[in-house]
Image (tube, rainbow, N blue to C red; front, side, top):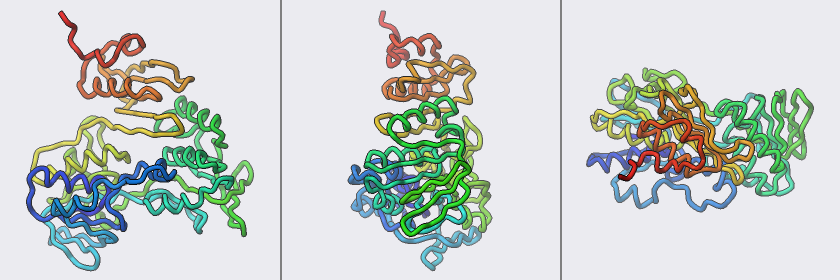
Length: 397
């Protein structure tokens, strides 16, 4: 049984079949849709340019004999009898994968038709209806979701104001310097980005909302709260599955409870490279879903891939692999000021992180160096005349 029909759950179901499992597979989701990919919800889907975001077409599940239950939530787990209550009925399982992800964080006192959050397809559809050219959208939070929505909304002709408590957008993930780069990108595009601002209250009026901050009031038609994710652990913790800001799993996505596994946003994973991590990225959810499926079949597996994510904002694409904090030397190739660069993190002469904007080929070459553990000199990485795709190739005699 797989509870949670996002990309982690859907990938796990497909992997079970790929690995030769011919038993029953029940995939349970609480939304009315087929499993879909979430990254487009703040970008192409929100902007109306992505016609399909499903992981697999409907016929895939029938062809693979995967029973898909939509609009259904798990409410009780009994680890003693190995049963999960779904839709009012207790259903037995041999192995259970928890892939329920989480919910968009709500802020107290903020509600109403004009207050939006972004986690589900329905959330994106509802927000899209409010993105009317000339109307004003206020975004609370300049993390990845907030910045991506700001870029998409601005592209639709919406007047956008972003309010952020930190000094720069995406500062927690990128640091102040790269955050400042994206602050400049948003402001140059015409978004009113206000950092170091604390929101005190939100007042509803007959025509919209008034957001009161420590620097004055802002009127708007709609408000997006982009304040992060709250993981859905209540059912699992109540059953005795160890949780701590996520379901605790080992390197192979196994919990301490026999027969129970977790993957994706819900998982607090013991990563072989980084220790206990809670990663909310698409690539991690896909790969953990595959690893969890093989672990459910009794395979000796571990999820040890470096963290990999990307973000599209206007014409700029940010890509990141690995953890810069692991590096003892940072090497810059290109120009941050021109939004065309790659920063490599080195440790012991090997690449441990790659972060780039506007240079996808060089980012991918650096990612290959990271995955291969191939030694490389800082001078090679810095020198733009060096083709990084050839660094690992042996020289011809």
